[in-house]
Image (tube, rainbow, N blue to C red; front, side, top):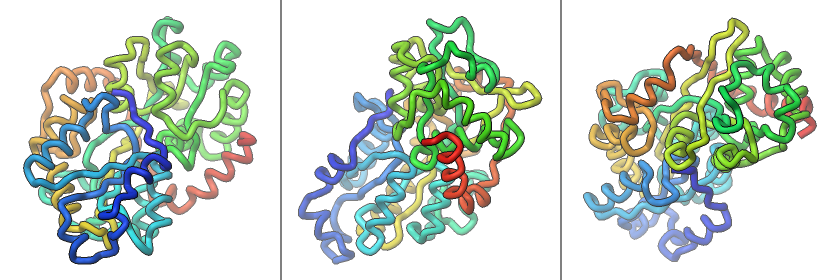
Length: 351
Protein backbone atom coordinates (compact mmCIF):
# COMPACT_ATOMS: atom_id res chain seq x y z
CA UNK A 1 0.00 0.00 0.00
CA UNK A 2 2.27 2.83 -1.18
CA UNK A 3 1.54 6.26 0.07
CA UNK A 4 -0.49 8.16 -2.45
CA UNK A 5 0.41 11.74 -3.26
CA UNK A 6 -2.31 14.10 -4.43
CA UNK A 7 -0.91 17.46 -5.40
CA UNK A 8 -2.51 20.47 -3.83
CA UNK A 9 -3.51 21.69 -7.26
CA UNK A 10 -5.48 18.50 -7.88
CA UNK A 11 -6.81 18.56 -4.34
CA UNK A 12 -8.04 22.10 -4.84
CA UNK A 13 -9.70 21.12 -8.06
CA UNK A 14 -11.46 18.25 -6.31
CA UNK A 15 -12.65 20.57 -3.60
CA UNK A 16 -13.78 23.36 -5.92
CA UNK A 17 -17.42 22.31 -5.84
CA UNK A 18 -20.35 24.66 -5.26
CA UNK A 19 -21.16 22.96 -1.94
CA UNK A 20 -17.69 23.46 -0.56
CA UNK A 21 -17.21 26.91 -2.01
CA UNK A 22 -20.31 27.95 -0.08
CA UNK A 23 -18.95 26.61 3.21
CA UNK A 24 -18.90 29.54 5.54
CA UNK A 25 -20.89 28.17 8.44
CA UNK A 26 -24.31 28.57 6.80
CA UNK A 27 -27.10 26.24 7.89
CA UNK A 28 -27.14 24.53 4.49
CA UNK A 29 -23.42 23.82 4.76
CA UNK A 30 -23.80 22.57 8.31
CA UNK A 31 -26.58 20.21 7.29
CA UNK A 32 -24.74 18.87 4.25
CA UNK A 33 -24.06 15.13 4.24
CA UNK A 34 -20.32 15.50 3.79
CA UNK A 35 -17.14 15.86 5.77
CA UNK A 36 -13.73 17.03 4.56
CA UNK A 37 -10.50 15.52 5.83
CA UNK A 38 -7.07 17.07 5.36
CA UNK A 39 -4.50 14.38 6.10
CA UNK A 40 -0.84 13.51 5.99
CA UNK A 41 -0.24 10.68 3.57
CA UNK A 42 0.20 7.04 4.54
CA UNK A 43 -3.22 5.69 5.49
CA UNK A 44 -4.91 5.67 2.09
CA UNK A 45 -4.09 2.90 -0.37
CA UNK A 46 -3.06 3.56 -3.93
CA UNK A 47 -5.41 0.79 -5.03
CA UNK A 48 -8.23 1.52 -2.62
CA UNK A 49 -6.92 -1.01 -0.10
CA UNK A 50 -5.80 1.23 2.76
CA UNK A 51 -7.23 1.76 6.23
CA UNK A 52 -8.75 5.09 5.22
CA UNK A 53 -10.42 3.46 2.21
CA UNK A 54 -12.17 0.92 4.45
CA UNK A 55 -13.02 3.38 7.22
CA UNK A 56 -14.38 6.07 4.91
CA UNK A 57 -16.47 3.57 2.92
CA UNK A 58 -17.94 2.03 6.07
CA UNK A 59 -18.58 5.47 7.56
CA UNK A 60 -20.50 6.61 4.47
CA UNK A 61 -22.45 3.36 4.37
CA UNK A 62 -23.44 3.70 8.02
CA UNK A 63 -24.14 7.44 8.15
CA UNK A 64 -24.76 8.54 4.57
CA UNK A 65 -22.05 11.19 5.03
CA UNK A 66 -19.60 11.41 2.12
CA UNK A 67 -15.92 11.87 2.96
CA UNK A 68 -13.95 14.35 0.88
CA UNK A 69 -10.24 13.67 1.22
CA UNK A 70 -7.24 15.94 0.62
CA UNK A 71 -3.72 14.60 1.12
CA UNK A 72 -0.33 16.23 1.54
CA UNK A 73 2.82 16.30 3.61
CA UNK A 74 2.43 16.63 7.39
CA UNK A 75 3.48 20.30 7.41
CA UNK A 76 1.80 20.98 4.10
CA UNK A 77 -1.73 20.18 5.29
CA UNK A 78 -1.26 22.35 8.39
CA UNK A 79 -0.05 25.29 6.31
CA UNK A 80 -3.07 24.92 4.04
CA UNK A 81 -5.36 25.03 7.08
CA UNK A 82 -3.51 28.13 8.31
CA UNK A 83 -4.14 29.91 5.01
CA UNK A 84 -7.84 29.03 5.25
CA UNK A 85 -8.21 29.95 8.92
CA UNK A 86 -10.60 32.84 8.23
CA UNK A 87 -12.79 30.56 6.10
CA UNK A 88 -12.09 26.92 7.03
CA UNK A 89 -12.67 24.28 4.38
CA UNK A 90 -11.60 21.20 6.36
CA UNK A 91 -13.53 19.55 9.17
CA UNK A 92 -10.92 17.08 10.37
CA UNK A 93 -7.14 17.51 10.30
CA UNK A 94 -4.84 14.47 10.58
CA UNK A 95 -1.09 14.92 10.79
CA UNK A 96 2.03 13.75 12.63
CA UNK A 97 3.89 15.31 15.57
CA UNK A 98 5.14 17.98 15.89
CA UNK A 99 2.72 19.35 13.32
CA UNK A 100 -0.40 18.42 15.27
CA UNK A 101 0.99 20.44 18.21
CA UNK A 102 1.78 23.24 15.78
CA UNK A 103 -1.79 23.19 14.48
CA UNK A 104 -3.10 23.37 18.02
CA UNK A 105 -0.79 26.26 18.91
CA UNK A 106 -2.02 28.18 15.86
CA UNK A 107 -5.63 27.85 16.99
CA UNK A 108 -6.61 25.50 14.18
CA UNK A 109 -8.13 22.85 16.45
CA UNK A 110 -11.21 22.99 18.68
CA UNK A 111 -11.64 20.89 21.80
CA UNK A 112 -13.71 17.73 21.41
CA UNK A 113 -13.67 14.67 23.63
CA UNK A 114 -13.79 11.78 21.17
CA UNK A 115 -15.89 8.81 22.26
CA UNK A 116 -13.70 6.13 23.94
CA UNK A 117 -10.81 8.60 24.22
CA UNK A 118 -10.19 7.14 27.68
CA UNK A 119 -8.83 4.05 25.91
CA UNK A 120 -5.98 6.11 24.41
CA UNK A 121 -2.89 6.64 26.55
CA UNK A 122 -2.10 10.12 27.84
CA UNK A 123 1.01 10.47 25.68
CA UNK A 124 -1.08 9.93 22.54
CA UNK A 125 -3.59 12.73 23.04
CA UNK A 126 -3.82 16.35 24.12
CA UNK A 127 -4.91 16.83 27.70
CA UNK A 128 -7.44 19.46 26.64
CA UNK A 129 -9.04 17.28 23.95
CA UNK A 130 -7.80 19.26 20.95
CA UNK A 131 -6.26 16.19 19.25
CA UNK A 132 -6.00 12.43 19.65
CA UNK A 133 -4.08 9.64 17.95
CA UNK A 134 -6.13 7.46 15.60
CA UNK A 135 -3.27 5.23 14.38
CA UNK A 136 -0.04 4.64 16.25
CA UNK A 137 3.17 4.43 14.27
CA UNK A 138 6.95 4.55 14.68
CA UNK A 139 9.75 6.25 12.81
CA UNK A 140 12.19 4.12 10.85
CA UNK A 141 14.35 3.71 7.77
CA UNK A 142 14.22 1.38 4.78
CA UNK A 143 16.97 -0.36 2.83
CA UNK A 144 17.19 -2.47 -0.33
CA UNK A 145 17.44 -6.11 0.82
CA UNK A 146 18.60 -7.30 -2.59
CA UNK A 147 21.54 -4.91 -2.97
CA UNK A 148 22.58 -4.91 0.70
CA UNK A 149 23.21 -8.26 2.38
CA UNK A 150 22.08 -6.82 5.70
CA UNK A 151 20.66 -3.58 7.01
CA UNK A 152 23.08 -0.85 8.10
CA UNK A 153 23.43 -0.68 11.88
CA UNK A 154 24.74 2.81 12.59
CA UNK A 155 24.44 6.37 11.35
CA UNK A 156 28.16 6.36 10.54
CA UNK A 157 27.77 3.52 8.04
CA UNK A 158 25.68 5.84 5.89
CA UNK A 159 28.72 8.08 5.36
CA UNK A 160 30.40 5.32 3.34
CA UNK A 161 31.09 6.17 -0.31
CA UNK A 162 28.91 3.28 -1.50
CA UNK A 163 25.87 5.33 -0.50
CA UNK A 164 26.81 8.33 -2.65
CA UNK A 165 23.69 9.34 -4.62
CA UNK A 166 22.03 6.21 -3.23
CA UNK A 167 20.61 7.78 -0.07
CA UNK A 168 17.78 10.24 0.42
CA UNK A 169 15.61 11.53 3.23
CA UNK A 170 12.54 13.73 3.09
CA UNK A 171 12.75 17.40 4.02
CA UNK A 172 12.58 18.42 7.71
CA UNK A 173 9.89 21.01 8.31
CA UNK A 174 7.89 19.84 5.30
CA UNK A 175 7.50 16.10 5.78
CA UNK A 176 6.73 14.58 9.18
CA UNK A 177 9.13 11.70 8.59
CA UNK A 178 11.76 14.17 7.39
CA UNK A 179 11.42 16.16 10.60
CA UNK A 180 11.76 12.84 12.43
CA UNK A 181 15.22 12.32 10.90
CA UNK A 182 16.39 15.47 12.65
CA UNK A 183 14.68 14.51 15.94
CA UNK A 184 16.19 11.02 16.00
CA UNK A 185 19.66 12.25 15.01
CA UNK A 186 19.56 14.80 17.85
CA UNK A 187 18.64 12.04 20.28
CA UNK A 188 21.02 9.34 19.01
CA UNK A 189 24.07 11.52 18.42
CA UNK A 190 23.98 13.54 21.64
CA UNK A 191 22.33 16.85 20.76
CA UNK A 192 21.52 19.38 18.09
CA UNK A 193 25.08 20.44 17.24
CA UNK A 194 26.26 16.84 16.88
CA UNK A 195 23.25 16.00 14.71
CA UNK A 196 23.80 19.00 12.43
CA UNK A 197 27.51 18.21 12.09
CA UNK A 198 26.64 14.66 11.08
CA UNK A 199 23.91 15.67 8.61
CA UNK A 200 26.35 18.13 7.04
CA UNK A 201 28.71 15.20 6.34
CA UNK A 202 25.83 13.03 5.13
CA UNK A 203 24.97 15.63 2.52
CA UNK A 204 27.84 14.27 0.38
CA UNK A 205 25.78 11.11 -0.18
CA UNK A 206 22.28 12.62 -0.10
CA UNK A 207 20.43 12.79 -3.42
CA UNK A 208 18.61 15.94 -2.31
CA UNK A 209 15.35 17.23 -0.83
CA UNK A 210 12.03 15.42 -1.12
CA UNK A 211 8.69 16.79 0.03
CA UNK A 212 7.24 13.27 -0.01
CA UNK A 213 8.52 10.41 2.12
CA UNK A 214 6.16 8.02 0.36
CA UNK A 215 7.96 8.44 -2.96
CA UNK A 216 11.26 7.22 -1.52
CA UNK A 217 10.34 3.60 -0.74
CA UNK A 218 9.59 2.68 -4.40
CA UNK A 219 13.03 4.05 -5.32
CA UNK A 220 14.62 1.89 -2.64
CA UNK A 221 12.71 -1.17 -3.81
CA UNK A 222 13.92 -0.63 -7.40
CA UNK A 223 17.52 -0.07 -6.30
CA UNK A 224 17.63 3.57 -7.36
CA UNK A 225 18.32 4.23 -3.68
CA UNK A 226 19.88 1.91 -1.12
CA UNK A 227 18.57 3.70 1.97
CA UNK A 228 15.81 6.20 2.79
CA UNK A 229 13.74 7.31 5.75
CA UNK A 230 10.16 6.30 6.35
CA UNK A 231 7.95 4.94 9.09
CA UNK A 232 6.95 1.45 10.12
CA UNK A 233 3.26 1.57 9.19
CA UNK A 234 3.81 2.99 5.73
CA UNK A 235 6.86 0.90 4.89
CA UNK A 236 5.41 -2.37 6.19
CA UNK A 237 2.29 -1.80 4.09
CA UNK A 238 4.44 -0.93 1.06
CA UNK A 239 6.55 -4.06 1.50
CA UNK A 240 3.53 -6.16 0.51
CA UNK A 241 4.10 -5.05 -3.08
CA UNK A 242 7.77 -4.06 -2.78
CA UNK A 243 9.66 -7.29 -1.99
CA UNK A 244 13.10 -5.66 -1.74
CA UNK A 245 12.06 -3.29 1.05
CA UNK A 246 13.49 -3.88 4.53
CA UNK A 247 12.88 -1.82 7.68
CA UNK A 248 15.70 -0.86 10.07
CA UNK A 249 16.56 1.56 12.88
CA UNK A 250 19.95 3.33 13.25
CA UNK A 251 21.60 2.75 16.62
CA UNK A 252 22.33 5.39 19.23
CA UNK A 253 25.73 5.99 20.83
CA UNK A 254 25.22 2.94 23.07
CA UNK A 255 24.78 0.71 20.03
CA UNK A 256 21.03 0.15 20.54
CA UNK A 257 18.59 0.68 17.64
CA UNK A 258 16.10 3.34 18.66
CA UNK A 259 12.82 4.81 17.53
CA UNK A 260 9.95 6.93 18.81
CA UNK A 261 6.21 7.06 18.35
CA UNK A 262 5.04 9.06 15.37
CA UNK A 263 1.27 8.66 15.48
CA UNK A 264 -1.34 9.90 13.06
CA UNK A 265 -3.13 12.40 15.29
CA UNK A 266 -6.53 13.87 14.44
CA UNK A 267 -8.36 16.97 15.54
CA UNK A 268 -11.59 18.80 14.81
CA UNK A 269 -10.90 22.01 12.89
CA UNK A 270 -11.90 25.29 14.55
CA UNK A 271 -15.11 26.64 12.97
CA UNK A 272 -15.31 23.54 10.77
CA UNK A 273 -18.05 23.92 8.15
CA UNK A 274 -19.44 20.46 9.03
CA UNK A 275 -18.45 20.25 12.66
CA UNK A 276 -21.03 17.64 13.73
CA UNK A 277 -20.04 15.37 10.84
CA UNK A 278 -16.41 15.80 11.82
CA UNK A 279 -17.20 14.68 15.36
CA UNK A 280 -19.01 11.61 14.04
CA UNK A 281 -16.04 10.68 11.86
CA UNK A 282 -13.55 11.07 14.72
CA UNK A 283 -15.73 8.85 16.93
CA UNK A 284 -15.97 6.32 14.12
CA UNK A 285 -12.21 6.19 13.47
CA UNK A 286 -11.52 5.47 17.13
CA UNK A 287 -14.29 2.86 17.49
CA UNK A 288 -13.17 -0.63 18.42
CA UNK A 289 -14.00 -2.24 15.07
CA UNK A 290 -12.05 0.32 13.09
CA UNK A 291 -9.13 0.14 15.52
CA UNK A 292 -9.09 -3.66 15.24
CA UNK A 293 -8.57 -3.19 11.50
CA UNK A 294 -5.56 -0.85 11.87
CA UNK A 295 -2.99 -3.65 11.70
CA UNK A 296 -5.00 -6.05 9.57
CA UNK A 297 -5.65 -3.52 6.81
CA UNK A 298 -3.34 -0.55 7.40
CA UNK A 299 -0.24 -2.29 8.70
CA UNK A 300 -0.16 0.05 11.69
CA UNK A 301 -0.71 -0.04 15.44
CA UNK A 302 -4.04 0.57 17.14
CA UNK A 303 -4.30 3.78 19.16
CA UNK A 304 -6.54 2.03 21.69
CA UNK A 305 -4.96 0.27 24.66
CA UNK A 306 -7.80 -2.24 24.87
CA UNK A 307 -7.31 -3.51 21.30
CA UNK A 308 -4.96 -6.49 21.20
CA UNK A 309 -4.45 -7.37 17.55
CA UNK A 310 -3.46 -10.97 16.79
CA UNK A 311 -3.61 -10.98 12.99
CA UNK A 312 -0.61 -11.90 10.83
CA UNK A 313 0.35 -8.26 10.31
CA UNK A 314 0.29 -7.55 14.04
CA UNK A 315 2.60 -10.51 14.68
CA UNK A 316 5.01 -9.40 11.93
CA UNK A 317 5.01 -5.82 13.25
CA UNK A 318 5.84 -7.03 16.76
CA UNK A 319 8.81 -8.93 15.32
CA UNK A 320 10.06 -5.80 13.50
CA UNK A 321 10.01 -3.83 16.74
CA UNK A 322 11.70 -6.55 18.79
CA UNK A 323 14.94 -5.32 20.41
CA UNK A 324 14.34 -1.66 19.53
CA UNK A 325 14.57 0.95 22.31
CA UNK A 326 11.88 3.62 22.49
CA UNK A 327 12.37 7.23 23.52
CA UNK A 328 9.85 10.04 23.89
CA UNK A 329 10.78 13.37 22.30
CA UNK A 330 10.02 16.61 24.13
CA UNK A 331 7.28 17.66 21.73
CA UNK A 332 6.69 20.97 23.51
CA UNK A 333 10.34 21.90 22.98
CA UNK A 334 10.26 20.72 19.37
CA UNK A 335 7.06 22.60 18.63
CA UNK A 336 8.50 25.75 20.22
CA UNK A 337 11.84 25.53 18.41
CA UNK A 338 10.91 23.73 15.20
CA UNK A 339 11.43 26.75 12.96
CA UNK A 340 14.91 27.42 14.35
CA UNK A 341 15.83 23.73 14.19
CA UNK A 342 14.84 23.59 10.53
CA UNK A 343 16.69 26.82 9.74
CA UNK A 344 19.81 25.46 11.46
CA UNK A 345 19.47 22.25 9.42
CA UNK A 346 19.21 24.29 6.21
CA UNK A 347 22.33 26.25 7.13
CA UNK A 348 24.29 23.12 8.01
CA UNK A 349 23.36 21.20 4.88
CA UNK A 350 23.10 24.05 2.41
CA UNK A 351 19.55 22.99 1.57
